[in-house]
Structures are given as C-alpha cells and as structure tokens.
Image 1 (cartoon, each protein chain N blue to C red):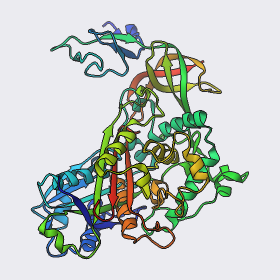
Image 2: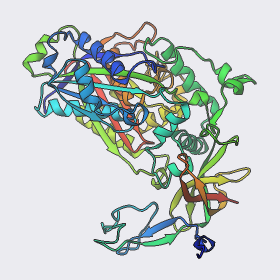
Image 3: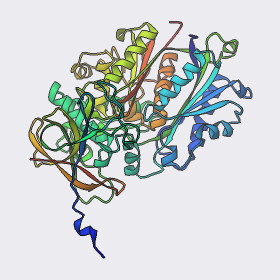
Image 4: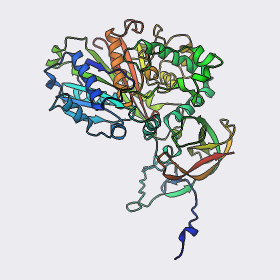
Length: 129
Length: 401
C-alpha cells in the first residue's frame, strides 16, 4: 500500500479573493463585490468561484495587544495579537511573534497551522519581524 | 407612527445568579415590571412579548426561551419571539417592541432581557462572546472582544494622548455610581490611588489585554431586566396610573463591517454615530438636549469613544470632560449613572433593556440617593453589539416631546 501521507506536503496559505469583474481584492471573502455587485459562489456551481490571491509577506503593524486571559490549556503567560496592512491595501488580524511590538513597524506575515479555541486546526497568520 | 411609552420597569440584581434558572430570573424581572405597571390578574392585556437573550442555547443548553417565559408567567396566548442580536439584543428587543406598537400591530408589549453567563467558566463565557467575531479571520486566532478592546484602546491612546490614568478615572466614576445602585453587580468603590497611582496598583489592577487592565473591563454577570410598553393613544393607557409614563422619543440603529480590520479607520465607530443620528432625527433632539446617558462601557475606552461618536464631545476631547467632572453624577452631562457595564455588570442579553430601565428610573426621579440626576428631561442609551458592528441608540423623555 502506498502511504500517501508521505506526499502530504500542504501549502500553507491564507487567501484573499479577487472580484472577476472589477478586480477588487477582499479578505476575508464576501459573497458579493462591494464595488460592482458581482456575485461569488463558493461551490462554483451557479457562478465560478473567485480567483484566490495568496496573502503573506511584508506588512505594517496598525494595532497590537498582549492578552493575558488565555483559554484553559495554554501554558504560556500571554499571546500577542495584531492588525496589519499589506502593500495591496488589504488588512488582516492575526497572532504576533515580536519581542517589542511598535505600532507602524514593518513585519512579515507568515502562515502556520494552529489550533483554535475548540482544538480545530487552521492555517493562519503569525506576524514576525 | 403612534407614540409609545414605558409604563412599567423591572430588574433583578446583577451578579452571580448561577444557582437559578435562566427563565426564572427573566420571570422575576418580568414580574417586577408587571407589578410596577400595576398589572396583576390582567396579564392577558400583554399581547406581545419580546425576549432578548444571546447565549441560552450555548451557555444553558436552552432554546425556545420566549415561549418558556410566557408559559412560566401564565401569559399565554401572548405572541412571543426571541431577539438575538449579540450584546445589543436588549435594545433590539425594545426596538421591536416599539415597532410592534408604533405600527399599530398591538397596544401593549413586554420586553424582557436576560442572561445566565456564570453557569460556565470565565473562559467559556469569553469564548461564547467571541463566537460573534468572524470565524475564519478573527475567532480562529484566539482573538476575543477584550483583545479588540485592547487594540482599540492603544490606537486611541496613540492618536489622542489618552493615558492609563484617564482609563482609571472612568472606572472610578462608574464604581462611585454603581456603589449606590441597588441592582449593580459590583457595589464596591475604588480610588484612582488604589488602581493607578499607588506603586502597587498593578497588583490589583493587572493587565488583561494591554493597555486595558482589570478595572478597564466589565465583570461577567448574570441578570435580567424587563419593560412594559404601551401606545399613548391606546384606551388601555388610562389604566397605567401607578407610574409616570416615560416616552420612547427616539430609536436608531445601524450596522458596520463584521471584521474590525476592514473599517477605513478602525477608531471610527460609524454604526454608533449613525444610530445616534437616527435617534436624534426621530426625536427632534440634539446632543446638547440630552440630560444624561448610559453608554455601553464593556471596556472603559468605549464610554469615551461612544460619547464622542454620539456628539457629546469632539473627537479626542472626552477625557478632558471626564477629568473636569462633566460626566460625573453632579456634572453637566452625567454618563453611566447606573455604574455602567463596568460596575453594574453586563449580562449580555439583559444589558440593553437594563440601560433603558435606568433611563426610566432617572427620568421618573426614582434613582437611589446620591446618584439621581437633577431634573433630567431626556436620557440616551447606546447598546453596542459586536465590536461596534450592530448598535442601537434609544432616547427616552419626560412629558410629550
């Protein structure tokens, strides 16, 4: 038997979407374009799904906080969170892994697999220096 | 549209009521409102019941809450629906009650909001509220409402020069009012020395979501509040002689983006401004006509930011008013006379109803000694859902506006 898990190299990414009609970018994905009202169909049955645009790389820190009240099971003192802006104007929230965060600092958005509060795996942003 | 007044009010104490049943605490507040309105055997005059609750299905494993409340109070066959609109459920339920009467659909409505949050652990309660965030782009990361409260606070401090001491002053003022409020969760005074100025202040006022500290956040509370609404032109109105009717003179609501990061300026709370503008337009009132206000200070920064959005102060100037005592109980514009969410507590589904209960209490002149506003004419409540993505503003007035 072939062990396919050996080939299970998943590309970690968080995607924005691009309106096929006017080209506006969105993150997270809406169901209709705010500019031209083009519909999106995630199933691709009625309308084609919109082009995915990988979101990562250089970004600027707009806001941050260090949260000490963490879910049960976390054996760390705090988690850092931030809101960043990418060079294409899109913004995202995510975790922050920087010793001394400062508003306005340049960061790099990486994507890693994490667990959410319910123990479910997801690919999400960690902003690093 | 018909004019609508509040003719009865009821409230439980806010705090830890986890030994009780959700419907029982709602029933207790409802019973108080019926008593206050002078309704006893004639409960059948209530044609419609709206119940505000956010988490009964998650926290208490209970659904069909509105039907259950009606049955426990023997108010069948009143029509009954549950209104869930996050932490703004309460004011939304009042808005639905208003619409039902103003449109001519019914004459008398009972609105009851309640929440039993301490039935679960503190983290489970925080996680439940966080479920209103965007599942993929916010919630998954472990982001919570306090986390966004912290980020919002930092942005505000960096732009307007607000200090941690200013944040402490909001808490001190709210605790002074809450201490005198018989239904408040936290009836303990605090001083700026204890929570900020003392070198050991951090011991009792540690960071929760920097730069927000423990005293910058509301407690997790259980509780319920209830109102009886009646059409001014209804023949039934003449039976409500026990209390002075208080007019609902303005209601406005608005929504904003689900994801906070998608707002052009995350410090601008568009839904608050629009909700207030709609309420002012309906009542023909202006910010300077408002005698006092209940503003949704789940985080103390929100009292300041909301007071600017509704037009009480210029952007970045609310802290100056706070320092000068303008928003204190004896100031020109008292804010959070009940103690606010900060001291009175925040059982999410009950909060919006409780804020309007406070407006009525103040306008009737029935607030406890030491926290009664002098001769108020118009009060405003702002109930803030999500992190500002669904907001309801309500103005109540004495006399016929």
